[in-house]
Amino acid sequence: MKWTTAKRVLILSGAWHLFGCAPTVKFEAPDKPIEINMNIKIEHEIRLKIEKDVDDLISTQKGLF
Image (cartoon, rainbow, N blue to C red; front, side):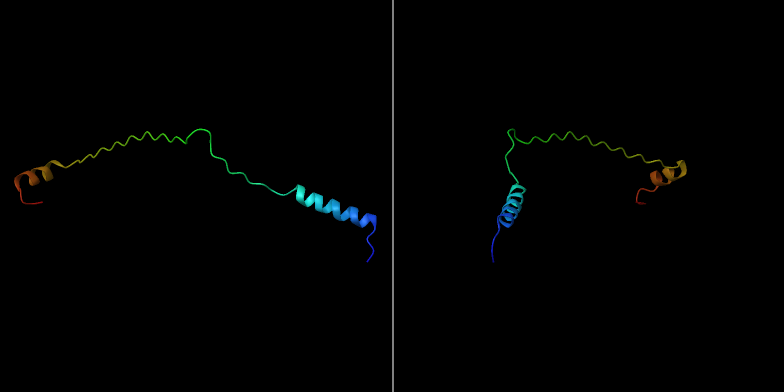
């Protein structure tokens, strides 16, 4: 098989394009440390509303609950 100059140029240019487009990945540590600020405020409120007659029943019969 005879290699002509045109074939050689095509093969070399194809290889040049393949190696030139190779993706690269870099892993670098950040300059500053990672800082996480978590300001959390949890509030809860429990409201219990009881009818007057149920309140009287609970207060008169201590062993009900």
